[in-house]
Image (tube, rainbow over the protein chains, first blue to last red):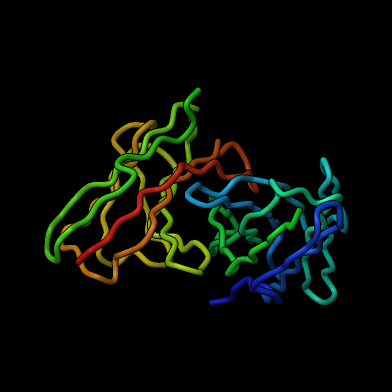
Length: 117
Length: 114
């Protein structure tokens, strides 16, 4: 089946810098994408989502960009803080034959973000 | 609200043993899911349910069974544990009132099969 993948497995930044985490997807029919943050020993935590009819969406300190032409998704974190250190996953919506997603997600491998004070 | 609650947090099984991973949510969500996460990997869907009495297979269902007798509970059963089932298991839920809703995850159950 088709899958979501990440370009870089690790990213190290200095506190206060901006971080960019990238994700490539291969299913052109995917219509919903989500970024999750997973801290050590915890379950994934929702960060931000975007639908395929949008190019950009902003949240608090985070922005998700979607480029459907090259099937690329990115998460930008402004003024990165030590508390942002975690594994970040992108996920895409899995549709079934009837076109109803039932919320099923395909996850990428994840990017480890380390923020140095 | 407690959200999605999973028990136990940790468990060690011997090959061939069985166990049930418990999952409960108090948000009145219709849709519930079980994912497994192997070291250094993303999450893979095992089973899901869109309502009480309705379950369906995900990407990696072999070796597992589920039931959904109530809206709140979605237990995952391992009948004959194998080393390949060593993983971290996450339960999740979503309201199920429309397409493309974010999932709420529990804190996970770390299972080792030796």
